[in-house]
Length: 159
Image (tube, rainbow, N blue to C red; front, top):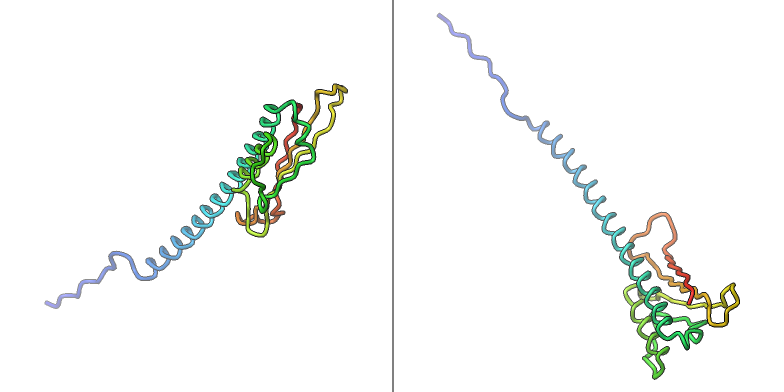
């Protein structure tokens, strides 16, 4: 009696199936890496905005603490590439500290700047005035896509 050879059946994965899975996984990992990179960039931008907001509120609180001389802060501009040393007056000390608070926003050759502008309040009171604090910095190191790299935080308060 002649026996027929048993048919060989394929079991397991073939090379083509393994290559297809590797290709799909590599595309998925590249997408995940891009997502993580974008999330880190957005997180850095949010941190910079937080630093700017805290610094703006900080100088406004310093002006409230020195309310007798608060108008002396009017038309003050600081730049992180030339922070002045603290002087002898409270205003000079506060402005110097404020400039130091802006240092995390400093990018080489693109300093962060802060400006204070005060005007009399609309109610006409000589002791009441409105101050606008504006902080501008370059956010290009965080990979801004499709927009301006210049970021601005502006706060307005009555003193």
